[in-house]
Image 1 (cartoon, one colour):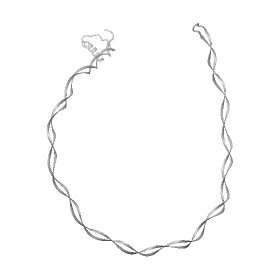
Image 2 (spheres, rainbow, N blue to C red; image 1 turned 180 degrees about the vertical axis):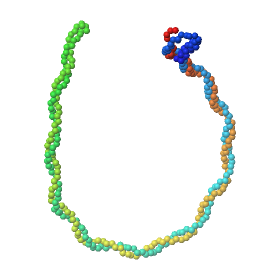
Image 3 (cartoon, helix red, strand yellow; image 1 turned 45 degrees about the vertical axis):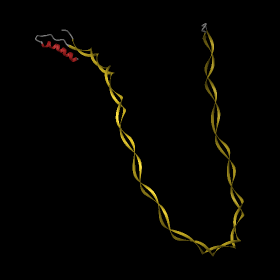
Length: 341
């Protein structure tokens, strides 16, 4: 801005200086001043406006449509067939086998057996006979007795010691208080009880602990050894020879005859019949149900979804830029002529 005004000032003065065909007076001095100028500038603001537009929407609709389709329907028919099967048959077959038969024969034999014989015999043997004898012995036993023993223990005794303290005591004191009668307006004195705090000396007792040693006697149970003479029964055993008659059994051999049954095997051929099962082929006739597929045309209603276009007007809020002229203040430098022509 300063350059613009400087150019205008110089542009206006240069023609005068250029036409210097004749002498001219001297131009006055120029000075520049800062001035505040109010101008207008354009600003763009964003505003919202409602715009109506036509929108095409695709709306799905379900329509029932006839569809023709070919379906295979099962059909059953009976058919006679033949097959060969193996039938089990039983026949008797004669067979031979060798069998061993056992016959029992009676035979006389001899054997030697041990026969017991018992005899009474005198026998001498030594036996141990128990006996008891008494002996004089000495033994040491512990005899209990009680002895008195003096011991010491610390004892704490509490003693009451008087002590004087100063305490603040609240007492009731009568004081004359002026009172105004609201009806007559006369002032009078009334006696009122107010709390009064005063210091009093009070004697209290304080417990003081004193420790000292106390002697006491205790009965202590102990035991002392003592030797005593006692008579003890001592068991013993003595040997003694005893003669007694004892039955003695001995075994003596003796031959005896006895009869036994002895098995005697003999060989014999036996004929027997065995049932034998065999498979015999046999042709049989049977009926079978055969399934056949037969085509059949059927018509059925099928729901079909169809898309339909619908046009509707929709109001939308659209942002737009609006130019607005705003005043503003600008500081410029202006040339000023000082002095006179």
